[in-house]
Every structure is written in C-alpha cells, then in structure tokens.
Image (cartoon, rainbow, N blue to C red; front, side):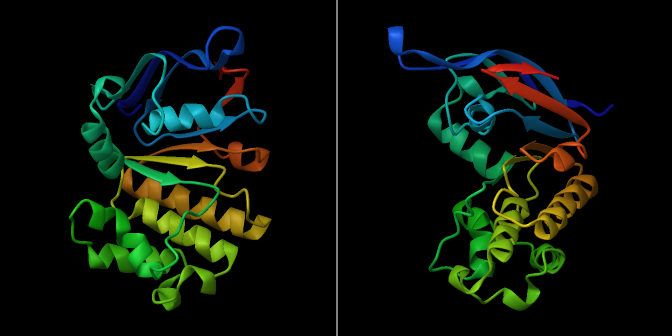
Length: 223
C-alpha cells in the first residue's frame, strides 16, 4: 500500500452553542493512502460536505487533527492554509463556480495565476483534449452546456497536478452519460499522476468504483 497522505484523528465540528448546538462531525478518525479513491456517502445533512470542507481547510474543525503529508493543517495560519489550498488541493464542486468574464482557458489556468505560476502549456493542451474542450478554449461559460462547464471545473481542479482532489457531488447536475465520462477523466488522472481522490456522491454506481466507501450518519463515520 502507498504512503498515508491524510490522517484524521478524533475530528469534531460543532455549529452553535448550548441548546442550539449541532454536532456536524462526531469523533471522526480515518486514514487515506496516496493514490487512493475514497467515496463518501450519506444522507443530506449527515456531515459529508462539512468533512470535505475541513479537509480542504475551507472550514475549521472544533476539535481533533487533520494531518496532510506530515503537517497538521488545523494548526496553520490563514496564509499557510491559503497556500495549502492552492498547491495541495484540487476542488470540484457541484456548482461549477466558473468566472463568467473569463474564457475556458483563462478559467482553467486561474489557480496558477493566483499562485504566480506559469502554466505548463503541453499539460494544458492535454487537459483540454481529454476533457473534450480543445475546440472551446476561447468560449465563455455562458456559451457552454452544463456538462462542458463541469469539464472546465475539472480541468481547473487538475491544472496544478494537486496531490489531493476533493469533489463534492461533481456529477450532481449531469446526465448519466456525462457523469460516466467525467468520472472516467478523474480516475484516469489519479492513476496517471498518483493523486488521491475523495469524492462525495449519492450515486451508488460511482461509489462502487472507489477503492473504499465511507458512510456518514449524523456526523459519525463508518467504513
């Protein structure tokens, strides 16, 4: 088995206080190995997105630790976490979050621009090719279908070859054909570049393709 890249220990996340307190994550512990594809399932409101947001440092846990590549991200400063998100994480959301005034290519390379890094043009061409966007690189988001917009979001998440990809219901707005194709793109990427994929899904056929499946029920994680 590959090296452990993520270790989560006794993670808790509480919203509110006193009688209004809601425990979104309750003593969650697990490990994920380099190159692994992990699916997270559970009912709406069970804590799946909260867990993903904590792993991506978009949300701060109430207690516990998240050790990524030997570093506990729960103890890092905001500036350090910003660099962590730019360099270590590729985010894919159900809502595509594309910038309407940027064309396809500009949307894809945006994470590199934010990090003052020049794109690897050969890799950019490869990404646009495998996502079927080569002919659309100068088009704007409003000129694309939903499936094409999600592919732009995929390419944007992969452009900096992040070691970890976090995907929150990435096929939620897509038909079955587009869903199969974008999951295939993701699986090919993690295999080729030894990336780790943690993906939230309600789709049993997608979860079944993962190396492991975690289920969250009322903030409690089981495998």
